[in-house]
Structure formats: structure tokens, C-alpha cells
Amino acid sequence: MKKRLFSKFDYWLVAIIFVLSSCSNPQSVKNINSDEFKRLIESSNAPLVLDVRTDMEVATGVIPDAIQIDYTDDNFEQKITQLDKSKTVFVYCATGGRSAAAASVLAGNGFEHVYNLEGGIEAWKEKGFAVVKNNN
Image 1: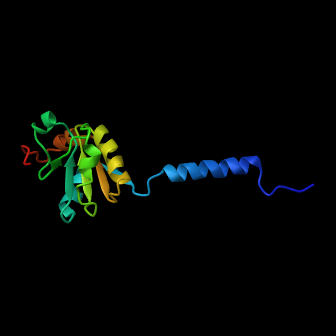
Image 2: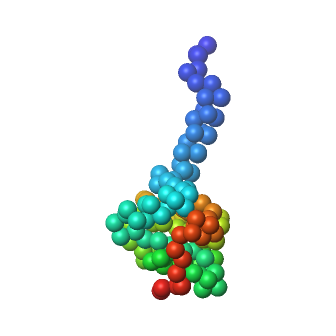
Image 3: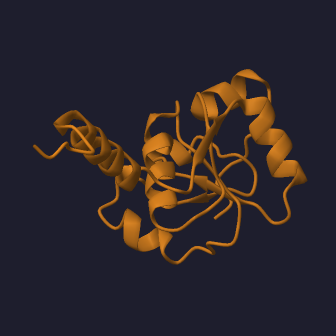
């Protein structure tokens, strides 16, 4: 009787590892707090600060130099393709949920350096950091 080199369990394990590794994105999104977010923006060369909130939310104020692309817009993915993928992207929303999803979409579209603001602009404001009226 010929002895098998691998058991059925080994084949399943390899299959699961393959599926998980193929689903993971090689570009990672880093979730960071508002102190780190501010520090990195200030130390980055020409950062891209991306506000993914709605027009109504943006009217209340944005992080300085932010541009807006509404994550809920049907054309969000098409609009981000017009951005410079070589830039470091700092993405935020109101509380961090939409921006986390948007950051994953950015990474999935080839953006290699993506930072998500945990707690969103609300956490930013709680720290007393600057918010300006929309400058777009």
C-alpha cells in the first residue's frame, strides 16, 4: 500500500491558507489616532487629506487642506482613480466607519500608504485641532 505524503487535513489547511492570503490586501491600511494623524500629516511631503463625508457634513468644517470625495457617492471608486497613487493618503469621516471602508477601497485600488483616522473628525475636534470651512 502506497503511503500518502499529505493527509486530507493538510490539503484543507493549504487551501484555507491560499484563500486567506489571496483575499488579503498587500497594501495595508493603518488605523491611527488623531495625535498620530496630525503628526504624520505635518511631517509628510505633500500629503493627500481626504474627507469622505457628505456635502452637508463637510459644510460644518474640514481638516485644513482636505479634499472631499463622498464615500456614499455612486462614483466614489471612479473619482479616487483620479488621485495621485504615489501620495500618502490620510482619510477621515465623521467617526471612523466610512473612512475605514474608504481606506480599504483606496488600498484595493493601488494606494500604498493609507492612514485612517480612528474616531474621525469628532476625535480630531475633541483634541482641539483646527477645523476650517470647506476650502475646495
